[in-house]
Amino acid sequence: MKKIGIIILMVLVILVGYLAYTTITAPNLQRNIKAKLPPNLSDSAILHFQQAISFQTISYDDAKKWDSVPFIQFRHFLETTYPFVHQKLEREIISQYTLVYKWQGTNLNLAPFILMAHQDVVPIEESTRKQWTFKPFSGTIKDGYIWGRGTTDDKINLISIFESAEKLLRENYQPKRTVYFVFGHDEEIGGKQGAVKVAELFKARNIKADLIMDEGGIITREKVPGIHKPVALIGTAEKGYMSLELSVNKKGGHSSQPDKETAIDILNKALVKLRKQPFEARFTEPMQGFMQYLGPSMQFPNNMAFANPTLFKRLIVNSYEKQGAGNAMIRTTAVPTIIQAGIKDNVIPTLATAVVNFRLLPGDSASFVFNKVQEIINDKRVRIKHYDKNISEASATTPTKSVAFLRIDSIVKSSYDSVVSAPFLLIGATDSRHFTEVSDNIIKFSPMVDPIGFHGIDERVSMDSYHRSIWFFEQFLRSLKN
Ligand SMILES: [Zn+2]
Image 1: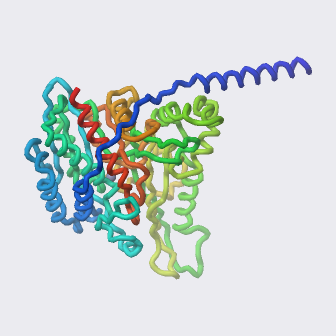
Image 2: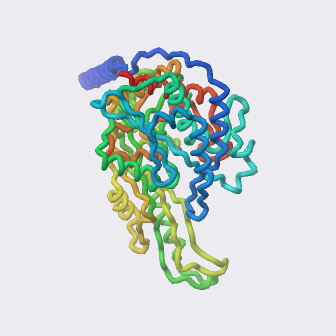
Image 3: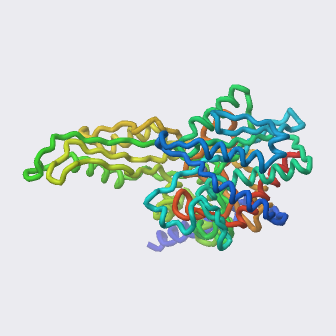
């Protein structure tokens, strides 16, 4: 008995020692870079942002609603507001509205960098229009924020790039490395005419970039459990996208004498199964990087868990899956978004359909998920098919050792005080996903702090974010001189 006790004690001592050792020796990957103070934010820069918001450059799912006028007016606004950019850079217009600028560098041996942003915004949901504090396209400034549709997604990036480029061109600045700006016009509806066409063009021209930066992760405060410093979530990969339609066809009839099971019942069971049996949780490369980068900045016991993710997988998963955003980082998600059946209260419908939207974790291909859904539902009466052609696989992962990651990491740190950074798996989809053949090093990051109302009511971003965002792009462009 005593012997067993001693053995258990020894095992415990070794385990505790091991955990303490791995926690203490986990390398600190946060590079010590001091933030530089930005020059003052000019009144004209503020005005330009407000003006940019006033153009209703809306992308609609329904092509009939599309209005080209705001896009043309927005382009004219850019031409008159940023004359140096338009005199000194080469501009091409793709699919009538997407804008591509080339700022030629002096050293042709260097692979170019590409900065991306999109001109279009999502519509205002009519039923919510009255709930907006200010008119959605007013660009009102109040309480340290600029308010309006498109402020956070994605005109802050677009205008910040123009502001910084215009400033440097006025100084006669010339980069060594060529930089392209790509401003799509249909990102919110898949980028088929914009980003897709530009990527094809770049591929045909053999343009291979060392870095692409598009919208994505942000700087966030008090949202990562265990960290009190602002965290820059630098997107190194994005999840894939797919929707499936489930349908059940079963003879209906009068509701006074229902069968034991109706089409609605069968469909309902399938949906419940899908929700009850979530996809397997996994730590993908961006998630592993997230833990390695942030672990040492955390307190006990979070730092210990992040230093030993295999041992503490259950614990980490339990904590992350509680919240929608955390859950989305560790697994393929499935959620019903449309459900349809029935036309009359006393008629049992013959057909019941539902659309389920999936966001694919890197490593879970669209075909794997399709098969898995069939396996989970396991009911031949439920027909499963792709809802539409809008299917994209999860992206490849940009390594944290790449020039692209290191460059963005150092510039975000020199733009914001005491930021810690981490690679991050982006949950949404961006235009940059179409550029996988143009670059292996795609970063999805928007240099702003906790924007509010993304795609929703009262969309707004802080003036400080706008100020720092211009500063971020200025430093980024200046870094191209060597
Ligand atoms: Zn966007």
